[in-house]
Length: 477
Picture 1 (cartoon, rainbow, N blue to C red):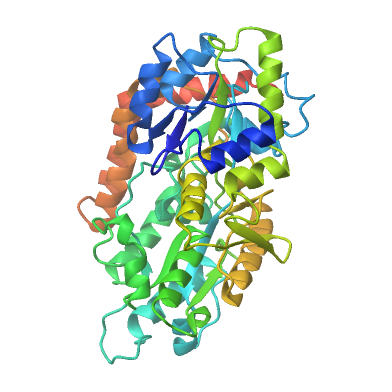
Picture 2 (cartoon, one colour; picture 1 turned 45 degrees about the vertical axis):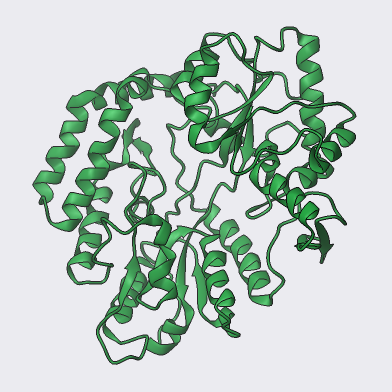
């Protein structure tokens, strides 16, 4: 069972037939629209008809309960003989685990994707270099606000664009990234030999005081609490804002906008830098989990070790380069060709049958891949437009990721499951995120922010801290 982001592939369709030919066996996939997936998954987990393989968030409460109750295979000590299923990164595997145990094959994503996307032409206009430190970042934001970077003679621009964030605390928001720049833990970190949430540290308050100063000086878009995140690129493209803190592939999204608008010099509009250093000697970079969902194997449908071996051999073959190219790129020579040995260029785009192949890949089969995706990298070919600015930004992306991973501040609590967090998380997780916005917008002061942090503690947070620390103590060393 897997997520679906469009029309479900036909079982007799060209794409599924190509995969079945590659595997030498038939496959049956239940495709569920993404918007309905969690609800369907919860129902499925409570039923007696769990499929052999399920795409699942490994920390979804219903899955955690099912896995710990024995409904899914514990794969911790079972992957060594499958060369393509052994974890590519120990940190990502740990992050996707449940109390250090592996209940699925994590779907690989970059362990670090944070970056700052900047209007390159504005930098040139105000005469500044690309920022490297938090102080540089502030100076660029100030210049973008006060020095008329769009040249229209009006004071109608701002430095930083932040949208209404759909997630809670520690969900890779611009706020979370900035807090990490200042030295706060990414979600959870160690202080005095104990794991604590990042918002319990002085660096969290320091970061938000700094950002509040930027807001009060007009260096941030005034609608940061309400701007639709689906429209995040618009102020950047239309020349109202100059910087975005987000994942690095955002750089390609804004390049697309300028290119599709007919701008022949679209490459001159977009620059990208990595995480900001706190000082000349201190740098803390915001990492990601390194995964997006896992492929879990049901004990209900896969009952014996021999059955498990058969499923793992199939998944191991899909995890080869040839298998991942099929799942992420499609059929070579049919819907894409390889350029420069590392890039998939689309072909035959006007052919309806080929368009169906491409849609089947993008909307469905890529969800079964475990080694990255075609847009952010992995062992399949990356798909980017052919223009040199895209190749340049892709090369820069790889360089920045390698550099910032050296200073990444990983969330120490990711592998641990807190019972109270599962039971009360939906109620208490919003407290910090809401309080942060209220503080930045002036609805509450610093004492009000501290009071809300205390409310998190008394609403179940203290018990979460206890359970997280107990869980960390039990992890395999």
